[in-house]
Length: 375
Image 1 (spheres, rainbow, N blue to C red):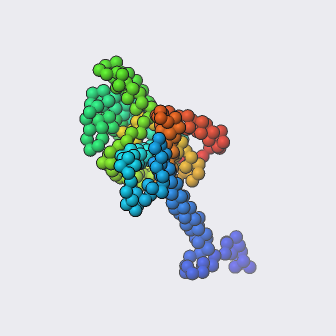
Image 2: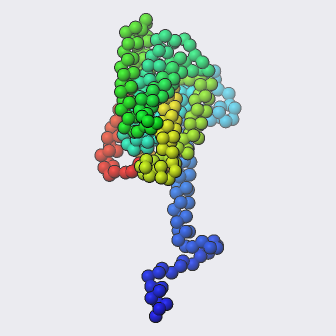
Image 3: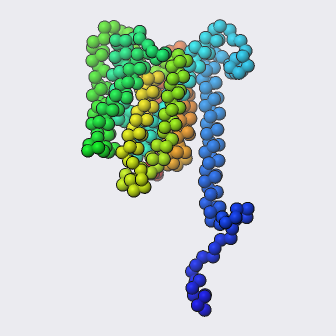
Protein backbone atom coordinates (compact mmCIF):
# COMPACT_ATOMS: atom_id res chain seq x y z
CA UNK A 1 0.00 0.00 0.00
CA UNK A 2 2.84 2.37 0.92
CA UNK A 3 4.48 1.71 -2.41
CA UNK A 4 1.23 2.42 -4.22
CA UNK A 5 0.82 5.75 -2.37
CA UNK A 6 4.44 6.84 -2.93
CA UNK A 7 4.15 6.22 -6.67
CA UNK A 8 0.75 7.79 -7.08
CA UNK A 9 0.62 10.66 -9.56
CA UNK A 10 4.16 10.03 -10.81
CA UNK A 11 4.19 9.54 -14.60
CA UNK A 12 5.96 6.45 -15.85
CA UNK A 13 9.43 6.93 -17.31
CA UNK A 14 9.39 6.80 -21.07
CA UNK A 15 11.22 3.95 -22.63
CA UNK A 16 14.25 4.81 -24.71
CA UNK A 17 13.72 5.56 -28.38
CA UNK A 18 14.87 2.69 -30.57
CA UNK A 19 18.24 3.37 -32.12
CA UNK A 20 19.04 6.25 -29.71
CA UNK A 21 20.30 4.78 -26.42
CA UNK A 22 19.47 6.89 -23.41
CA UNK A 23 17.14 9.25 -25.33
CA UNK A 24 13.53 9.15 -24.27
CA UNK A 25 10.53 9.41 -26.52
CA UNK A 26 9.86 12.92 -25.23
CA UNK A 27 13.23 14.27 -26.39
CA UNK A 28 12.85 12.57 -29.75
CA UNK A 29 9.47 14.20 -30.29
CA UNK A 30 10.95 17.56 -29.25
CA UNK A 31 13.69 17.28 -31.86
CA UNK A 32 11.25 16.42 -34.64
CA UNK A 33 9.72 19.94 -34.99
CA UNK A 34 13.20 21.49 -35.03
CA UNK A 35 14.36 19.22 -37.82
CA UNK A 36 11.13 19.79 -39.73
CA UNK A 37 11.56 23.55 -39.34
CA UNK A 38 15.09 23.42 -40.76
CA UNK A 39 13.95 21.34 -43.72
CA UNK A 40 11.12 23.75 -44.41
CA UNK A 41 13.44 26.75 -44.20
CA UNK A 42 15.92 25.13 -46.59
CA UNK A 43 13.11 24.34 -49.02
CA UNK A 44 11.85 27.93 -48.89
CA UNK A 45 15.37 29.34 -49.47
CA UNK A 46 15.94 27.03 -52.45
CA UNK A 47 12.54 27.90 -53.91
CA UNK A 48 13.10 31.65 -53.55
CA UNK A 49 16.57 31.33 -55.08
CA UNK A 50 15.08 29.63 -58.14
CA UNK A 51 12.33 32.25 -58.36
CA UNK A 52 14.95 35.03 -58.17
CA UNK A 53 16.95 33.42 -60.99
CA UNK A 54 13.84 33.19 -63.17
CA UNK A 55 12.88 36.78 -62.34
CA UNK A 56 16.36 38.02 -63.33
CA UNK A 57 16.27 36.14 -66.65
CA UNK A 58 12.79 37.37 -67.53
CA UNK A 59 13.63 40.93 -66.52
CA UNK A 60 16.79 40.98 -68.63
CA UNK A 61 14.89 39.64 -71.64
CA UNK A 62 12.19 42.34 -71.52
CA UNK A 63 12.58 45.77 -73.05
CA UNK A 64 12.37 47.70 -76.30
CA UNK A 65 14.72 45.09 -77.78
CA UNK A 66 13.73 41.56 -76.76
CA UNK A 67 16.46 39.09 -75.86
CA UNK A 68 15.56 35.42 -76.01
CA UNK A 69 16.15 33.63 -72.71
CA UNK A 70 17.70 30.67 -74.53
CA UNK A 71 20.25 32.92 -76.25
CA UNK A 72 21.14 34.63 -72.97
CA UNK A 73 21.69 31.31 -71.19
CA UNK A 74 23.85 30.11 -74.06
CA UNK A 75 25.92 33.31 -73.89
CA UNK A 76 26.29 33.19 -70.10
CA UNK A 77 27.04 29.49 -69.63
CA UNK A 78 28.12 28.08 -73.01
CA UNK A 79 30.20 30.95 -74.33
CA UNK A 80 27.93 31.51 -77.31
CA UNK A 81 28.76 34.68 -79.25
CA UNK A 82 26.12 37.41 -79.35
CA UNK A 83 25.86 40.23 -81.83
CA UNK A 84 27.57 43.47 -80.75
CA UNK A 85 24.20 45.09 -80.03
CA UNK A 86 22.92 42.10 -78.04
CA UNK A 87 26.17 41.95 -76.07
CA UNK A 88 25.98 45.65 -75.21
CA UNK A 89 22.33 45.44 -74.16
CA UNK A 90 22.89 42.34 -72.04
CA UNK A 91 26.19 43.10 -70.28
CA UNK A 92 26.30 46.89 -70.25
CA UNK A 93 22.69 47.88 -69.66
CA UNK A 94 20.14 45.34 -68.52
CA UNK A 95 22.03 42.76 -66.47
CA UNK A 96 23.85 45.39 -64.32
CA UNK A 97 20.57 47.21 -63.68
CA UNK A 98 18.64 44.06 -62.81
CA UNK A 99 21.37 42.89 -60.43
CA UNK A 100 21.47 46.36 -58.87
CA UNK A 101 17.72 46.24 -58.26
CA UNK A 102 18.13 42.83 -56.59
CA UNK A 103 20.83 44.22 -54.28
CA UNK A 104 18.69 47.25 -53.42
CA UNK A 105 15.66 45.09 -52.66
CA UNK A 106 17.63 42.72 -50.44
CA UNK A 107 19.33 45.57 -48.55
CA UNK A 108 16.11 47.49 -47.93
CA UNK A 109 14.20 44.39 -46.85
CA UNK A 110 16.84 43.20 -44.37
CA UNK A 111 17.19 46.73 -43.02
CA UNK A 112 13.42 46.93 -42.56
CA UNK A 113 13.44 43.55 -40.79
CA UNK A 114 16.08 44.79 -38.35
CA UNK A 115 14.34 48.07 -37.57
CA UNK A 116 10.93 46.44 -37.21
CA UNK A 117 12.43 44.00 -34.74
CA UNK A 118 14.37 46.68 -32.87
CA UNK A 119 11.40 49.01 -32.44
CA UNK A 120 8.93 46.12 -32.12
CA UNK A 121 6.75 47.87 -34.68
CA UNK A 122 5.70 46.33 -38.02
CA UNK A 123 5.21 49.85 -39.40
CA UNK A 124 8.92 50.71 -39.08
CA UNK A 125 10.87 51.08 -42.32
CA UNK A 126 14.55 51.53 -43.27
CA UNK A 127 14.26 55.32 -43.29
CA UNK A 128 12.87 55.51 -39.78
CA UNK A 129 15.91 57.12 -38.13
CA UNK A 130 16.42 59.82 -40.73
CA UNK A 131 18.78 58.09 -43.14
CA UNK A 132 16.67 59.21 -46.10
CA UNK A 133 17.12 62.89 -45.24
CA UNK A 134 20.89 62.60 -44.98
CA UNK A 135 21.05 60.61 -48.19
CA UNK A 136 18.93 63.23 -49.97
CA UNK A 137 21.25 66.06 -48.94
CA UNK A 138 24.34 64.10 -49.96
CA UNK A 139 22.83 63.21 -53.32
CA UNK A 140 21.86 66.82 -53.99
CA UNK A 141 25.44 67.94 -53.32
CA UNK A 142 26.71 65.36 -55.79
CA UNK A 143 24.13 66.19 -58.46
CA UNK A 144 24.50 69.97 -58.26
CA UNK A 145 28.23 70.44 -57.60
CA UNK A 146 30.08 67.21 -58.46
CA UNK A 147 28.14 65.71 -61.34
CA UNK A 148 31.27 64.62 -63.28
CA UNK A 149 33.18 63.09 -60.36
CA UNK A 150 33.33 59.34 -59.64
CA UNK A 151 35.33 56.75 -57.67
CA UNK A 152 35.49 52.97 -58.28
CA UNK A 153 32.51 53.24 -60.59
CA UNK A 154 30.43 55.09 -57.98
CA UNK A 155 29.25 58.55 -58.96
CA UNK A 156 29.50 61.47 -56.54
CA UNK A 157 25.73 61.22 -56.10
CA UNK A 158 25.93 57.61 -54.91
CA UNK A 159 28.97 58.13 -52.68
CA UNK A 160 27.65 61.29 -51.04
CA UNK A 161 24.21 59.75 -50.56
CA UNK A 162 25.87 56.83 -48.78
CA UNK A 163 28.00 59.17 -46.66
CA UNK A 164 25.01 61.38 -45.84
CA UNK A 165 22.93 58.44 -44.63
CA UNK A 166 25.75 57.10 -42.45
CA UNK A 167 26.58 60.49 -40.94
CA UNK A 168 22.92 61.13 -40.20
CA UNK A 169 22.70 57.81 -38.40
CA UNK A 170 25.63 58.77 -36.13
CA UNK A 171 24.10 62.19 -35.43
CA UNK A 172 20.71 60.70 -34.58
CA UNK A 173 22.22 58.07 -32.33
CA UNK A 174 24.34 60.69 -30.57
CA UNK A 175 21.27 62.87 -29.96
CA UNK A 176 19.25 59.91 -28.69
CA UNK A 177 21.94 58.68 -26.32
CA UNK A 178 21.54 59.77 -22.69
CA UNK A 179 23.76 58.62 -19.80
CA UNK A 180 25.33 55.98 -21.97
CA UNK A 181 22.03 54.47 -23.10
CA UNK A 182 19.43 55.00 -25.79
CA UNK A 183 15.82 53.96 -26.18
CA UNK A 184 13.60 53.20 -29.13
CA UNK A 185 11.41 56.23 -28.46
CA UNK A 186 14.30 58.71 -28.41
CA UNK A 187 15.77 57.17 -31.56
CA UNK A 188 12.44 57.53 -33.35
CA UNK A 189 11.93 61.14 -32.26
CA UNK A 190 15.49 62.20 -33.03
CA UNK A 191 15.42 60.42 -36.39
CA UNK A 192 12.11 62.01 -37.34
CA UNK A 193 13.26 65.54 -36.46
CA UNK A 194 16.67 65.29 -38.14
CA UNK A 195 15.26 63.52 -41.19
CA UNK A 196 12.57 66.15 -41.72
CA UNK A 197 15.04 69.02 -41.46
CA UNK A 198 17.45 67.43 -43.92
CA UNK A 199 14.75 66.39 -46.38
CA UNK A 200 13.29 69.87 -46.57
CA UNK A 201 16.73 71.44 -46.91
CA UNK A 202 17.00 69.91 -50.38
CA UNK A 203 14.85 72.80 -51.61
CA UNK A 204 17.86 75.08 -51.12
CA UNK A 205 19.75 73.15 -53.79
CA UNK A 206 16.94 73.78 -56.25
CA UNK A 207 17.24 77.51 -55.56
CA UNK A 208 21.00 77.74 -55.94
CA UNK A 209 21.40 75.14 -58.70
CA UNK A 210 23.29 76.83 -61.57
CA UNK A 211 21.49 74.60 -64.07
CA UNK A 212 18.03 73.97 -62.61
CA UNK A 213 16.62 72.59 -65.85
CA UNK A 214 18.93 69.58 -65.65
CA UNK A 215 19.89 69.29 -62.00
CA UNK A 216 16.34 69.84 -60.74
CA UNK A 217 14.98 67.02 -62.87
CA UNK A 218 17.74 64.66 -61.77
CA UNK A 219 17.16 65.50 -58.10
CA UNK A 220 13.41 65.02 -58.51
CA UNK A 221 13.85 61.64 -60.19
CA UNK A 222 16.42 60.47 -57.64
CA UNK A 223 14.17 61.40 -54.70
CA UNK A 224 11.44 59.25 -56.24
CA UNK A 225 13.68 56.22 -56.65
CA UNK A 226 15.50 55.32 -59.85
CA UNK A 227 17.76 52.28 -60.17
CA UNK A 228 20.53 53.32 -62.52
CA UNK A 229 22.92 51.26 -64.64
CA UNK A 230 26.02 50.77 -62.46
CA UNK A 231 29.43 49.65 -63.59
CA UNK A 232 30.49 46.10 -62.82
CA UNK A 233 33.06 47.33 -60.30
CA UNK A 234 30.35 49.20 -58.47
CA UNK A 235 28.16 46.09 -58.43
CA UNK A 236 31.02 43.99 -57.08
CA UNK A 237 31.68 46.43 -54.24
CA UNK A 238 27.97 46.69 -53.41
CA UNK A 239 27.53 42.89 -53.44
CA UNK A 240 30.55 42.46 -51.15
CA UNK A 241 29.16 45.06 -48.74
CA UNK A 242 25.76 43.36 -48.72
CA UNK A 243 27.31 39.94 -48.09
CA UNK A 244 29.42 41.31 -45.22
CA UNK A 245 26.38 43.03 -43.71
CA UNK A 246 24.36 39.80 -43.84
CA UNK A 247 27.16 37.90 -42.11
CA UNK A 248 27.32 40.51 -39.35
CA UNK A 249 23.52 40.61 -39.13
CA UNK A 250 23.21 36.88 -38.44
CA UNK A 251 24.25 36.98 -34.75
CA UNK A 252 22.26 40.20 -34.32
CA UNK A 253 19.13 38.29 -35.34
CA UNK A 254 19.52 36.13 -32.24
CA UNK A 255 19.80 39.29 -30.15
CA UNK A 256 16.59 40.60 -31.72
CA UNK A 257 14.78 37.41 -30.71
CA UNK A 258 15.83 38.03 -27.12
CA UNK A 259 15.15 41.78 -27.18
CA UNK A 260 11.59 41.02 -28.24
CA UNK A 261 11.05 39.76 -24.68
CA UNK A 262 12.01 43.15 -23.23
CA UNK A 263 15.26 44.89 -22.34
CA UNK A 264 15.24 43.86 -18.68
CA UNK A 265 14.66 40.21 -19.46
CA UNK A 266 17.33 40.30 -22.16
CA UNK A 267 19.84 41.75 -19.69
CA UNK A 268 19.06 38.97 -17.24
CA UNK A 269 19.90 36.48 -19.97
CA UNK A 270 23.30 38.11 -20.44
CA UNK A 271 22.55 40.20 -23.54
CA UNK A 272 24.39 43.53 -23.66
CA UNK A 273 21.32 45.45 -24.75
CA UNK A 274 22.97 48.74 -25.63
CA UNK A 275 25.73 47.07 -27.64
CA UNK A 276 23.14 44.98 -29.50
CA UNK A 277 21.08 48.09 -30.24
CA UNK A 278 24.14 49.91 -31.58
CA UNK A 279 24.99 46.97 -33.84
CA UNK A 280 21.45 46.73 -35.20
CA UNK A 281 21.23 50.47 -35.90
CA UNK A 282 24.69 50.49 -37.52
CA UNK A 283 24.12 47.50 -39.81
CA UNK A 284 20.57 48.54 -40.69
CA UNK A 285 21.68 52.08 -41.52
CA UNK A 286 24.60 50.86 -43.64
CA UNK A 287 22.23 48.61 -45.60
CA UNK A 288 19.89 51.55 -46.09
CA UNK A 289 22.76 53.75 -47.25
CA UNK A 290 23.88 51.05 -49.69
CA UNK A 291 20.38 50.78 -51.16
CA UNK A 292 20.00 54.55 -51.41
CA UNK A 293 23.36 54.93 -53.18
CA UNK A 294 22.25 52.50 -55.90
CA UNK A 295 18.56 53.34 -56.30
CA UNK A 296 17.63 56.60 -54.62
CA UNK A 297 14.74 56.75 -52.17
CA UNK A 298 12.45 53.75 -52.71
CA UNK A 299 9.60 53.35 -50.26
CA UNK A 300 7.57 50.32 -49.18
CA UNK A 301 10.11 47.61 -50.09
CA UNK A 302 11.60 47.61 -46.60
CA UNK A 303 8.14 47.83 -45.07
CA UNK A 304 6.11 45.21 -46.92
CA UNK A 305 8.62 42.40 -47.45
CA UNK A 306 9.59 41.88 -43.77
CA UNK A 307 5.92 42.16 -42.83
CA UNK A 308 4.90 39.43 -45.28
CA UNK A 309 7.76 37.07 -44.44
CA UNK A 310 7.01 37.44 -40.73
CA UNK A 311 3.37 36.53 -41.32
CA UNK A 312 4.58 33.57 -43.39
CA UNK A 313 7.35 32.14 -41.21
CA UNK A 314 6.72 33.57 -37.75
CA UNK A 315 8.78 35.88 -35.51
CA UNK A 316 12.15 34.07 -35.51
CA UNK A 317 14.54 36.64 -37.00
CA UNK A 318 17.26 34.05 -37.64
CA UNK A 319 14.97 32.16 -40.01
CA UNK A 320 13.63 35.38 -41.50
CA UNK A 321 17.04 36.78 -42.49
CA UNK A 322 17.74 34.74 -45.68
CA UNK A 323 14.09 34.57 -46.68
CA UNK A 324 13.61 38.33 -46.34
CA UNK A 325 16.76 39.08 -48.36
CA UNK A 326 15.69 36.81 -51.23
CA UNK A 327 12.06 37.96 -51.18
CA UNK A 328 13.14 41.60 -51.20
CA UNK A 329 15.42 41.02 -54.17
CA UNK A 330 12.59 39.33 -56.10
CA UNK A 331 10.11 42.05 -55.19
CA UNK A 332 12.26 44.91 -56.43
CA UNK A 333 13.43 43.11 -59.58
CA UNK A 334 9.79 42.58 -60.58
CA UNK A 335 8.78 46.14 -59.67
CA UNK A 336 11.71 47.75 -61.49
CA UNK A 337 10.95 45.65 -64.55
CA UNK A 338 7.40 46.95 -64.50
CA UNK A 339 8.68 50.52 -64.08
CA UNK A 340 10.77 50.40 -67.26
CA UNK A 341 8.45 48.33 -69.46
CA UNK A 342 4.81 49.16 -68.65
CA UNK A 343 4.94 52.64 -70.19
CA UNK A 344 7.79 52.11 -72.67
CA UNK A 345 9.46 54.01 -74.24
CA UNK A 346 8.83 56.30 -71.27
CA UNK A 347 10.25 55.07 -67.95
CA UNK A 348 8.60 55.67 -64.58
CA UNK A 349 10.71 55.88 -61.40
CA UNK A 350 10.50 52.58 -59.57
CA UNK A 351 9.68 54.44 -56.36
CA UNK A 352 6.48 55.73 -57.95
CA UNK A 353 5.47 52.26 -59.11
CA UNK A 354 6.31 50.91 -55.66
CA UNK A 355 3.88 53.36 -54.06
CA UNK A 356 0.99 52.31 -56.29
CA UNK A 357 1.83 48.61 -55.95
CA UNK A 358 2.93 48.57 -52.34
CA UNK A 359 0.33 50.90 -50.87
CA UNK A 360 -2.80 48.94 -51.85
CA UNK A 361 -1.06 45.63 -51.17
CA UNK A 362 -0.11 46.74 -47.68
CA UNK A 363 -3.66 47.92 -46.98
CA UNK A 364 -4.94 44.56 -48.24
CA UNK A 365 -2.62 42.77 -45.82
CA UNK A 366 -3.79 44.93 -42.94
CA UNK A 367 -7.41 44.17 -43.74
CA UNK A 368 -6.90 40.45 -44.32
CA UNK A 369 -4.67 39.83 -41.32
CA UNK A 370 -6.45 41.66 -38.56
CA UNK A 371 -4.95 39.48 -35.89
CA UNK A 372 -1.93 40.72 -33.96
CA UNK A 373 1.37 38.88 -34.16
CA UNK A 374 4.44 39.21 -32.04
CA UNK A 375 7.79 40.54 -33.18
